[in-house]
Image 1: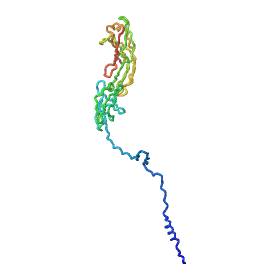
Image 2: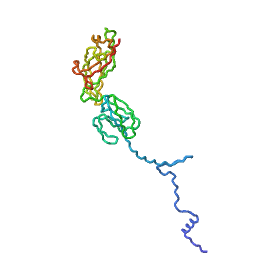
Image 3: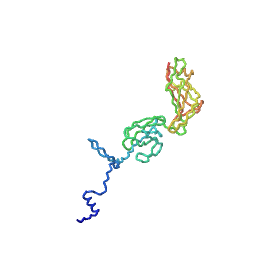
Image 4: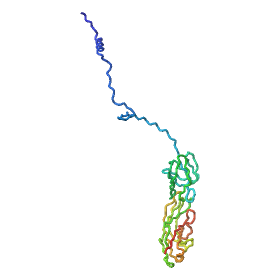
Length: 310
């Protein structure tokens, strides 16, 4: 019998077909590591439904509301007070000098007169408005409306305004409101408690101050009649100029001897006019050629009540 020769290539094809073998490239295993993502996958918890967080929408811009307070400040004399500080929390402003220009709550430039103010950017609702000038201060409750400007009536501050430029004005305050004068009988001598009094001096805002070189001592009975001639004594008190147009100068202290042991005072101060007062006036020298002036331009003095006791 004759053998038939089959080529080797044909045999290989037949063998692969019979075995069902796939000669395509081998499969590559999938990577089990998580793919990078901006949002981590939510972890399920038994009994709860979880969801992946979604970015919050950007808030829409809200319109800016400008709140303001408008008004003016007056001093002890009811006059407009330039340079007073008006504050609410950390927001503050000074009251204007004449014809000052500022920006209002609507962004417009407006003119303010002396003592007027506009305070911008304040919180709404019940608030506290603080006023201050020199050594005086005051707090006032106000209600700020939700938008626009809140108008306030005139705001009183217990202070005196500045004196004219170049003024040698001085203000004086006695430390004691009264002294005691003792007289045991009609013919007895007088004793004084205390025998000297302390007076504080300052140059008011914008004042130049002055040098005090003498003072006078006069006792009066109720009604203004002098009980004895005036005594004049030397002293030396230097009152320094004011710090600025809105701040008084430093305090200067003077100690003044008030004892009057004269026969004139002893004989006229009788129990029938028991009470009186002591007036101290201040001058540049013992000749009293030039009186020290107060903030109004009048001679400077202080008065102390005297009580006569047996």
